[in-house]
Image 1 (tube, rainbow, N blue to C red):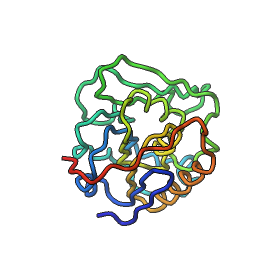
Image 2: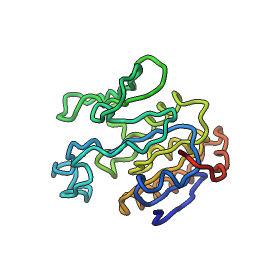
Image 3: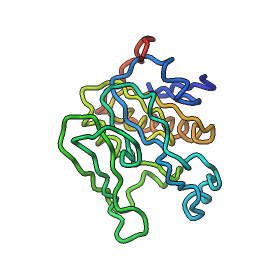
Length: 215
């Protein structure tokens, strides 16, 4: 069930449970997503409460990925999920400089490629974090490069919309689904702000495709 839908800058943002919505959507070319890993990050007062998400249970268990379509995919936190063996993981080197967070995060892919690494510049998050598991837009742009020539990208766990902002910056059409209304509002705001700073060298995204069964 789609609770709310917004279209901003050629990107489609949907509020609702992706498990109930995926079969309603037109087929996309590829997936780039960062689902809850099930590590209980909201139990950390230092990280979660400061962002208004403390005590919530949204990350107490890994997301259910069983309904995702079989298309080219990059799924962050791949080491936390029961996914098939894969040849080419992506690694995000956070360049933590000795801080007490994980030094890297790993993405599962079903792509025929060798392992690759993205090194984060120190303190390089986009204007500060608005979500406890937020990914940098630059990281998601890097990921999209491995999904070329895909033009339409699905993110069934949209969060703060870094995937959709990356799509906007690269002239791609993104569809993001988010179950939390507070995160959905943040995502809409971030995408809207990104449209106000267009890259003149990037072509606008293609129109969203017509309705077609996904599975």
